[in-house]
Length: 155
Image (cartoon, rainbow, N blue to C red; front, top):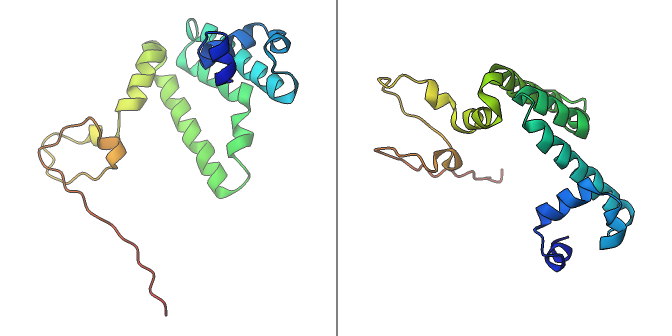
């Protein structure tokens, strides 16, 4: 797809949106068959969601995406872990419900920046443990980087 996009002087994302707007263009650009049909469907969703984000609440957009891609059947395999994964999605949905007045951008900023550490009082004198990924871009006066190692000892 990247090679095809380069030939057409488009980014892969622009090509995907073009295919989503005009699925019959697949035959013109040489992406027939199953992979082309999947790209057309995904591109169609992208076009639909882009149009929806301008007028819909974060909750409505999230619900539409979850429905379109049938995400629940993908992550909830009937196991306890699957139920936990779906429960996490429902927690994100609850946050989207609470952020309806903030718009999509405000909602995304909230979920990207808010963490458990944000709920601690500034005067609380306790160590905070977080992943390096969560810490990037944050400034702390003191940082300890513990090395955790798991060893297997043969019995």
